[in-house]
Image 1 (cartoon, rainbow, N blue to C red):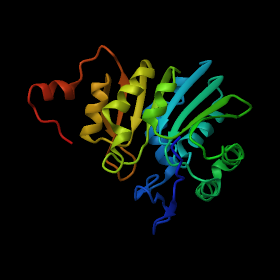
Image 2 (image 1 turned 90 degrees about the vertical axis):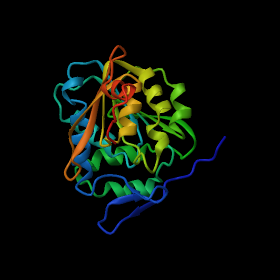
Image 3 (image 1 turned 30 degrees about the vertical axis):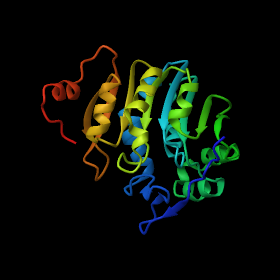
Length: 251
């Protein structure tokens, strides 16, 4: 079994948490919680889509600081029409040590109680799949520590929404590859949605080839655009068609 390397958390001059491995910020300098709400919750039309449901499943690529989980958890708690069970599946090749999680979470006092509950169940940093039962077992967090491409084949859970939040395609291309997008599509229910801050041409083409219909929307703060998508195995995708006709697709 390949040993797990913990993340090396550092903070830049603006106080934004960064990954030393990737020389990349974990979230926008304009606000991590606000970014999570705009891109991932808003981009997947949440909380509206989980209302009245017995069960709703979200899959995330890149757990990082746990920011998207905490933002989703808080939204779920504040929603009187929330789904009965929320399943959150996330992958992280370089998980943080609990002390670094606490340092990062201190920036968001609104998460205080739930962030502490997450840290109280934070697993030993060992490769493989870890299951955490939160919110009186109504939120189930499944954490895959290791390479997402190697762990995804172990999952058979139908997914309603995807948060694509790996480090940038230029720094971490495997997390945006065609192979990973096909693995996500295998789990997608008809009409499953996705959202990401990345609008790179390589990402759009990989998602389109995996039968996600994608479109750009206004991004968060200084990021002009973001990407949303919907799974449709019968769809004909614009980028793929234009490339087949020899028309350039912008990056």
